[in-house]
Length: 254
Image 1 (tube, helix red, strand yellow):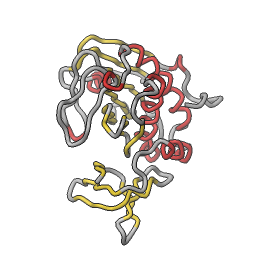
Image 2 (tube, one colour; image 1 turned 45 degrees about the vertical axis):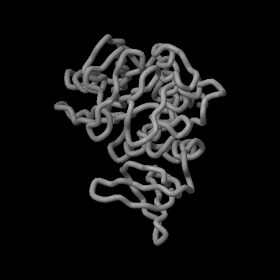
Image 3 (cartoon, helix red, strand yellow; image 1 turned 30 degrees about the vertical axis):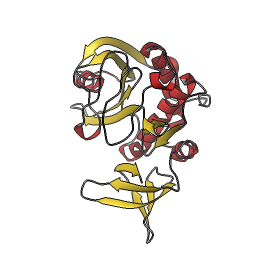
């Protein structure tokens, strides 16, 4: 990741960090803190989660030995600028993993919008959740679970762990890389104003541009060719008849 922009909103000293032993989920803990008036810029990590979750309410393996981290932000950008934040968070995770993986590891890429893959296998889960607070502020939590020593045994896609890729570091060491990378990428993102910079960097590490894919939407599935993303971060699906922008969906390579 490039160096932090001068005059950026965030520095390493901007953030606080609380390391907990066991929680239901770090996202749940951050949202509870926000409701209690926390000013944000708070990282919460835990050794273990008892009720970790992924997108669409899916359970997430949360045994000791993996990294479980959530970042609480309060009003990080105007609401209309938040759609690109998942891409930025994925870039931060990608940068952290790139810092620690050995050269012998399989290729590190991002599958739209924010799945970080190693050798086309999922290495982590990223879940962004937002909530309007009673005082009018808006809380946004970026939850990140990285498979270090443990991974799910089954799923609709391949899954891997850092240990399987020849990386055997501690969750605390990996978090230090994530902490730094997130600070830099949030400044690159610039409260949503620099979406073009984020999407350009995202394309440089994207997985599967030009390949056939299936996108599962809430009400249907559509197949076509992954034509990339636009400058807003939307997936562009070439159906053969039209270029279809897609804001949210699960992507599978065919």
